[in-house]
Image (cartoon, rainbow, N blue to C red; front, side):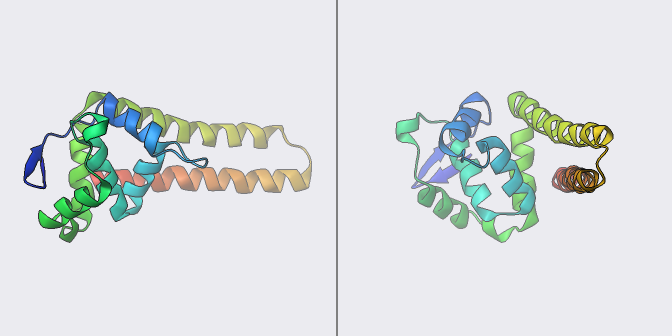
Length: 156
């Protein structure tokens, strides 16, 4: 529940939430769900605003502005909670089966990047290309480890 301008709103992290992320938060660089998860993991305060805003259980044309949501989060002390604010949002999100399925899909795509990098490396015979592929593999493995570690921190 989030109180904005004196009105209380329920939060739902299901299909409508995911659809809003896809339509309104995707960029050329990142699909909205991945972008939001990355920002939550990184501790970006804007992720709190976007996460709560897109989860509001209202039709799109009645959706309060990001500024109004930010002000409501400020008023209820969310921004003073530090890491606990991100853990709270993440825990609310995980209560929804649809969100959990999206998160599992995202994590499997990160694992897939590691697998693809390993396969590419094993097929390369040229020394210079092999070095570049090794760097790509190390980056993919580091990204996977970092994501897992940060998600564990959020789940604690």
